Each structure stands twice: as structure tokens, then as C-alpha cells.
Amino acid sequence: SILLVCSSGIFHQRCILTALLSGAAQGAAMIPVVSDENFQFPTKENLLDQLPILYSLCDEPDAIMQVILEVFMEIAVLFQPRSATMLVLSIKAGEIATRVKNGGRRRMQEVGSISSTTSMNAVTSKRYEI
Picture 1 (cartoon, helix red, strand yellow):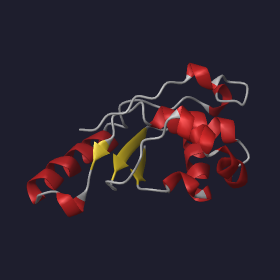
Picture 2 (tube, rainbow, N blue to C red):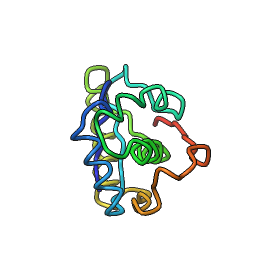
Picture 3 (cartoon, one colour):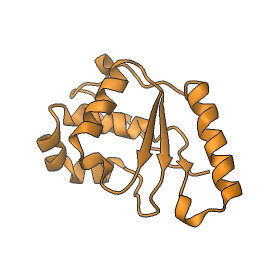
């Protein structure tokens, strides 16, 4: 499992993009955790707007766009320590631990099925918070 702690600008970091592609290639479960109240859930449209940045950061921008969208088909855990009580943080931490222990709720597709020829129209993004 990959625990992806999401904050603003996370997808502008080469090491994050590399880790996501590697995790997808291995079929790892991705568990998104939103830690920043300013984090914007990625959509196909805003990823396409960031395509020049993605090209500068990785060799497979189309594949990474699909992986990022796939990550958020999993329900993200909202974990914001600055604005939550200890009870809420404890509950959220327990939920994260359970997901990690269970290997996440879903596994990523293998990178072999993620290629630049894959139509981005076939990918949908569901955004949820709990």
C-alpha cells in the first residue's frame, strides 16, 4: 500500500510522480489522505492544464494523469490536524491504519494498461471526503 498524503502542489514533485508510477506498475493500493485544506482534488481538466509541468517532471505524462485520477477513485481520508479535535484525529488515524492493514480498498491498474494511447475520456474522477 502507498499512503499518499496530499497537500497543495504534491503533483508538482518528480519524486511523487515517480512513486505513483512505480506503485501502479506493482499494483499497489493507493490510500489518499488529504492533509491540507487548500488541496484541490485533481480533475482531467486541471491535469490537462498542468500538462507542460507534467512533461517537465516525468517521461509519461499521460500515464501519470491516469494514475492520479485513479488514486482519487478511492475515497480520500480528510486528516487535518490543525482544525480537528483529538477524538476526530484518533478516529481518522484508526481508519488510515485499517486501510493500510487491509491493503487499501482497491489496487491500481498495472502500468501495462496505462499508456499514452489510453483515452483520457475513459477515465472518470470521483471526489469524496469522509
